[in-house]
Every structure is written in C-alpha cells, then in structure tokens.
Length: 428
RNA sequence: GGUGGGGUGGCUGAGUGGUCGAAAGCGGCGGUCUUGAAAACCGUUGAGUGUAACAGCUCCCAGGGUUCGAAUCCCUGCCCCACCGCCA
Image (cartoon, rainbow, N blue to C red; front, side):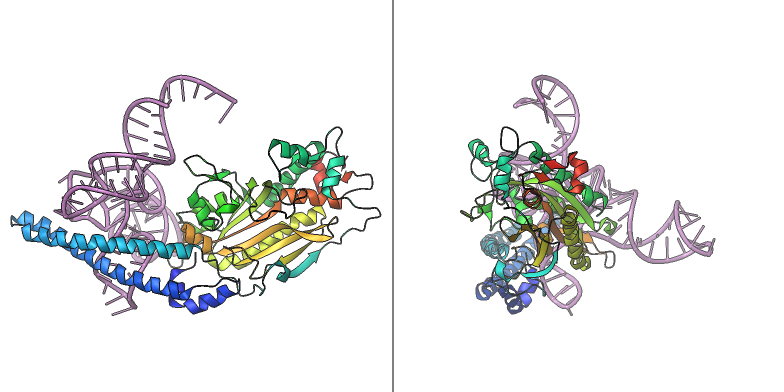
C-alpha cells in the first residue's frame, strides 16, 4: 500500500510515477472520495465527542443526585445522528480502502521505462554458453531417456496422478533435485549469513493481503474449499514475510533480519494457458529456496544489491551461464519498487530464461502488514523495508543443469560442487 | 473428539459498567552517583489518526449486540493453554 498521506498531498506526482508502470491513477475519483471521507469523518468525530462528554456528565450528575432526564434526551438525539454518520463513514472508508488496495507500488527512480519484458535492461552477464559438438536435447528428452526402467523425469505418469503441469522425478534426477536444495541452503546459511526457517505451506487471506497477492491476484492461487479459506502458498515469501505482520520490533539489533526458506510453491498459472507447456519450466507445483530480508529503510537499496549477489553466487558455483536484467516499469510486479531478474542460459532454447527474481518492496508490504521497528534515533515506530528473492528456483535450476551439463550419450555430468551431495559424478 | 481456563501496551500481568488508554513489574529512554561501568535512586515511556501546535477521535483478539456510558455484560468466530481420548 502506498502512503495515504503522500497520495493525498501530491496525487499528481504519484500518478506520474505510476504511469511508468502503465498504471493509470484515477485522481478524480480518489480525491473526491477523499474529500467526502474527510467531511464525514469530521462530522462523525464531532458527534462522538458530544456523546462522550454528555455520557461522562451523566455519571457526575447522577452522583450529585440531580435529574439526568434532559441529558438522556440529548444523547438519544445524538445517537441517532451518529448512527447515520457512522454508517456513511464506514461505507466510504470501505470504498477508499478497496481503491487503495489495488494501487501498485511506485517504481524506483532507476527503474527503466518500458512496456513489457522486451524492454528490460541487461546489466551484466556471467559465463560463456558452452558450444556443443553434438545435437543438444532439451531436458524433457534427456529426462525421458535417463533411468533404468522408467523415465527419470516423467511428465506422463504425473499427469495420470494429477494432471498437466506436474512432474515425477526418479533416481538420479530426484537426488539431484534434493542436492540442489541442500547446496543452496548451505551456501546461504554458511556464507551469506541467513537463518534457516521452515513455515506452513498454507496461509490465510490476511497473509496474502500483506504481501500483495490479494485482493488483486486471487486467480493465480490455489484455494482450499473448507470453511477456513486457506490458500496454498505461491511462494515462501508469503508466510516468511508475514512473520512480522502486526509486529513492532523493539530491538533494532535484530536488523537486518535475513531468512532463508525452502518450500514448495503452488501456482494455478491461470493466465498462461499454452505458455511453456512442455517440460518443467512452468509447473503448478515447484520448489524454491527463498531469501527474505527485513531491513531499516535506509538500508534497503544496498540490501537488494546483496540479495541479487547471493542468488548469482549459486549460479556461479554451479557453473551455469546467466545474465542479470533490471525489470522495466511495465514488467515489474505489483508490490515491488525495483526488481532484478536472473536468467539462466538454456541451450535447447538458445535463450536466457528466468531462474530468480529479487525485489525491493520498500515499505509497501510493511505498510499493508504493519511491520514496524522502533527507530532508536527518534524512539518512534517506523515501517520496515522488506525484500525477497529466489535463491534459486529448484526445478528451473535442475533443468538448466540437465541441459548445460548433458553429454553426447545422454548422461548428465554432475557439477563439481554438487558431487559431495550426490556421491556420483554423472547421472545416467 | 470431550472437559476446563484464557486472549489487555515491546514483554509479564492487574483491572467492582462511569474518575481506565488502563495498576504493578520488566525492558527502553533521560538523569543523579561513579575515573568508567554495574548496582541503587529519581524522572519518563502504548499504538494509530489528526493539528502549525494543542484539542479531538479510534484502538484492551475479530465481528455483532445490550447500555446514556463497555477492557469489564451478552452472542458468534478465530486463536492459545491444561487435562482426557485418539493418532503420524
């Protein structure tokens, strides 16, 4: 959520900044609602004040032994007025909140202009895509041929079990998948100073509102159908960031708070029919090692640079060529002020494809969540800044390894850093 | 699933329907003392909204209700704790 004060005081400036991401702010509706809200609120509070003072008086008058009849009559009159005003205020506040809840975050100054992913700007590349002396296969074909009796990567049997966009992994591929999780967790914990955390994979509406998935993106989520209205998490970002919802940290020594969480992620992929239907790129269920930071406002810009570096480290250790892009205004996510994507090289597609996304949300999520800390300078509560990033998406890393490390006979060489985790040097 | 007890400020924890935004303690902040620190002592300290600053308003899990007046009474929901049963 944006700062309502900022929105009120300089709506034109906000609208201009939101324009960068293709969002049109309806200033007129907003400001007229806002004016209405103010008028009614002033009126309501005046009536409340009158009621309160008279009610207090009744106690005193009664104690003095005098008659309270006239006062009662006055209060009664106030109450009926108040009931009307209250109702009005409630309804307008609801309208206003509904409007505010779907306004996206303001992009950072250095976010490039642009309409969609084609306008994202590459900021660096690492590694050299390998030249193959044979015809490369994609991970689907590779996975089908690996394994003794059954495919090591099996989409057909998964669709029998569940449906499309799911996978079954066996043997060496399943083990590689697990090894990747271990490797990533170990690096972030031991080398990057993260604390490991394990959280629920189902969350309530409030949590999803806090990080910004609700109310706008419900169709992307899987929802349970029991009366509790729980949702499967689309990313660990939701439960982990919401750890500090409605919290006020007293001790700023806890900051920055850096948490790493391995979890499955569930996405309905409602809007992506027909996109990446082959293979593991876009699944309804995948796993991810997620990095979440809570920092003081003045530290968030630097924290994003560190976060993206942590994610890149993993690819470097795995020897996977990648490039890093900064998302343009039109491609940036709803809650984010600034996002870097890391894209890994896929030989079968001759393209770089997203494998990580690291964002600075500034106080946008914190305001929705009321996640605060006490600033020792002022002694006052202030909103935290939140950040998160994938470090990395496991399924996509797995397929990148399969494709980049494939050998002519269809086997997969195991990257050196993974060998201690795997106990083997190749998967066949 | 059964029975009982609870949800109060950063934390622990009191709170006869009016003088309660709320005792006390801890923690925090400021000070006295000290070479410095600790201890001790004194003072101060809820969140939000609003204002130039006051004032005002809202908030004692959430949502309804009773009442002139609700942290306090009633209803519903959620959550927590204890014991019993069942169980990975």
